[in-house]
Image (cartoon, rainbow, N blue to C red):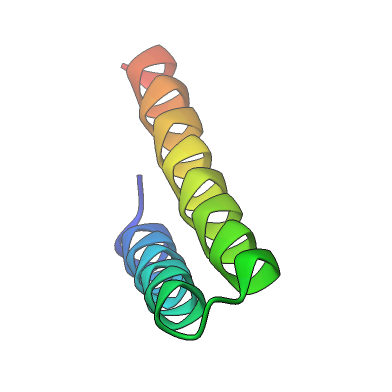
Length: 57
């Protein structure tokens, strides 16, 4: 997993957390769900990169 990928995934996860928190604070269920989805997507990308790295070794 390259450093760029790690940074990108961390940024995407952080942005998702901000969306989720903002949605929860403003009672915007759509924004909260969108934030959770963004976090899940970042987690899946990270897991995929780890699997790919494992097969490179």
